[in-house]
Length: 443
Image 1 (tube, rainbow, N blue to C red):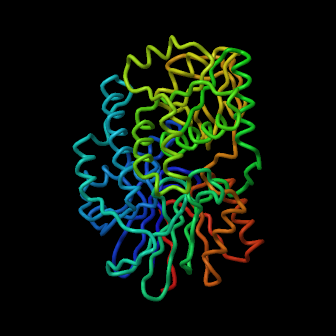
Image 2 (image 1 turned 90 degrees about the vertical axis):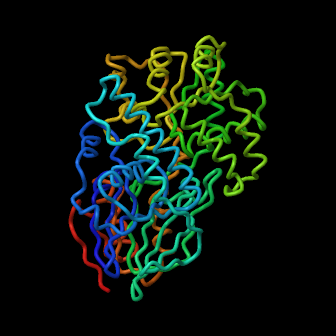
């Protein structure tokens, strides 16, 4: 077997990994680079492999940095099947249609010089998708199996078997105590592991999410302000809405209106509601929690929201404040001290969210500089990514046959520290992968 990484090396986005197995070439994930302009420029350059030679693509999950590049491959000659879980298949459609629409809009407005793909390319891509079940071996000239990864609806880790050796791709590993998603599972042992390392150098704070959220709501009630929560449209927005329903049931005195203004987030929420029996919470309770939130779907809703009496909570995307409707809300509410901006997820390098977390308050937004006077707070316990100890636990589940760990999907310093932790604690050879380098695996 051979491995070549074409993304998510010393960075957390752009996942694409080529695996050669039993004379077949397969790609695990096909994601977009995200973050600052230097990162997103990489999306304009085709990866350095022959797209026509790829036999199949396997998706671990449907986040944009894992699936957003698929239509580019279809446009440039990929003819095979794309395997994923049913939950992933449904979310991929949302993600890709949203991406194509945004690209068309930005090109029309002169905000970008080119379009990577359009809605016709998305339709062509969707025709290649094939759903697979969890915990079932499939044979396509090699064997593969999908197991629950947690993280988001439909996410999985994938193990490939060439007949003598197995290699597992972790995808993004979820949390053991995620509020609504199942904990990651790993019952199939492997000889090699490709492991994400987003938070490989740190432990998540053990904090009471409900109490922290309550504190921030109490503040905006006292200041008659807005609690603006930039959130990833898929998974994080739904976790936040469920968390609020739990808080309001426990502490009804802090119940105030909650609005969701992210078109993809609204569609993703309805998808989650339709597949609520795949979550770890009671489906009826989950759906009731989602119904208690007011969805902003039309321009008239947006205008009405601007006139709405405060205080209220507003969830909008993008989660890193790098695009989407949240930019306009940052402009509206970020200037005023009575409001609070609550950061709840990973913030990529170069993004406004990262700058705010690092306590910068002078930002460049929608063509002009702006001083952020609103309170900026973090809620770290909602992360959908495993921390260092949870990743170590995942490695241990892969079993005693594990010979080597390949680390991707992490910033360079994080990966260096995490590799050292693995080798010291588990005595397993660990590699910080390089972009474009070929790694030979013993057959």
